[in-house]
Length: 256
Ligand code: 13P
Image (tube, rainbow, N blue to C red; front, side):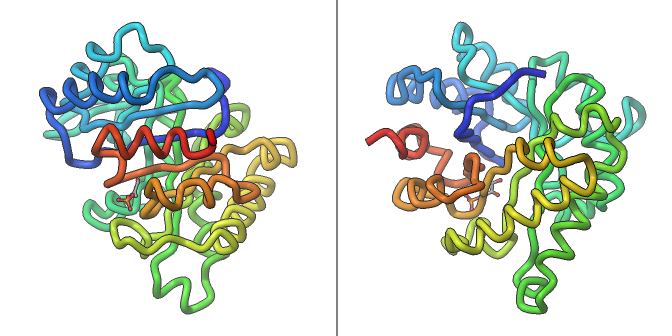
């Protein structure tokens, strides 16, 4: 797996953009964003649009490509699912696991998420383990418990030697798609809990070097303040990544 430049700007398109819209986006984004080697830019299109993304971004090694989810089995009778090896074969170098929408809508458990993380890592696809608390959990004072459990269980099936390759995304469930964003101090505290859990699961080095993204209503107007928060290594962007101009603005948020 490759080294990555920080900050990381990642676009999770969720169930938006088929192949045609993907090609149009990439064409426009290439013009608006330009080329910058001092950061990492990643896209997670729907899996049906992965080949279109790959084709449209040919020659642009700086635009990384990932899969939004994989099945925990390697193959079999699982209608509609894709496996980590298929994602690797299609050119995905990155893979999300445990997004809160998967946990909520599809019932992904910590154990399934752990297996997905392991499958991705086995295929050389760099896992991005998504964690985050609900509003009820936060109000009940369970933030640290929830994040520790999700990180520790999420890493539990990965070979110890590859655990340090896993990237994390802290996405408070109450901030996703709501226009509510965590205050920088809240994000900093949550990222510290994630790092502490990595320390317990791996070691001090892995905790210090862990890449932890923040996601939840990141927009052009708040990206800079978030990215300047100590311990926050990048952003995972949903709705504001759907238009080339707003995502390009986020990717340039620290430039001036
Ligand atoms: P929004 O940026 O739309 O809140 O989505 C965040 C997210 O879930 C990214 O994975």
